[in-house]
Image: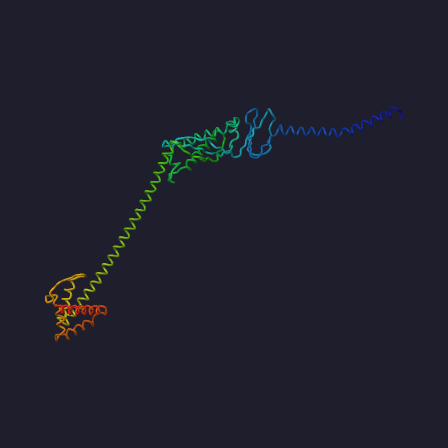
Length: 363
């Protein structure tokens, strides 16, 4: 083999080695190039919107598309298109202290809180998003809505001891509706809740409110006292009616008892008269004496004059021949009387006899 042939063969081997050693490098270069292209495409031609966010894609400053769902979206690289992302989760905002006037010209100081979120990303971006002053815009709307609503209510709608006069829920609902409509129309904001956080009064109004509360409390006291007096009158009236019924019943029963007694006495007198006229006269004279005296009565009389002569005459009659007839007639009457009346008559006659004996002895 000639020298030229050997040199040529050697060059071929060197060339083959070089080709084998450069292949991994070429593959590496291509991989790096593809990776760089992928990175450039990802960051230059796509945008990622995470959960809890919304975004608008701007083409030369004008909104091309709004994004409200999380995900990966295509866009042109800067400076052709840019992406602005906003937090669309619920936001909490407390308003400043607001002094306003009620319908009855009373000043009150209110502070409210608002729960809101982005409802229209495009309108939100065009109105307040780029300026970053959303809190001040919402507070201005709260101020306007609160002034408008409270101007139609008296102070008692906010502060009162009477539950039926309070209108706090109604007031909050009206403020919520006004604020929701204005914020959605002007700023693309959805207001989900508005509530009064604090309520206070200026020093000049405290005394007036205290007086109003005292008047309300006095009204309750007057109502309670009036109801108590009505109940007391009803109890007294019912007691009087019941007492009248009891008295009327007692009087009726007493009248019935008296009528029965008088009937029984008349019957006894009639039987006595039918049995013995002398005994009847004697009993009538006893009634006359009994009716003329009472408990504790002291009388000085002549025992031989009517009707007190019966006290001595009866003693004399006991020695007459007619004694047996009187006793028989008296027994006849006693046999026909009830046990109670019989015993009472016997006791009365016995007492009269004793009194007659004493009177006879004294005379």
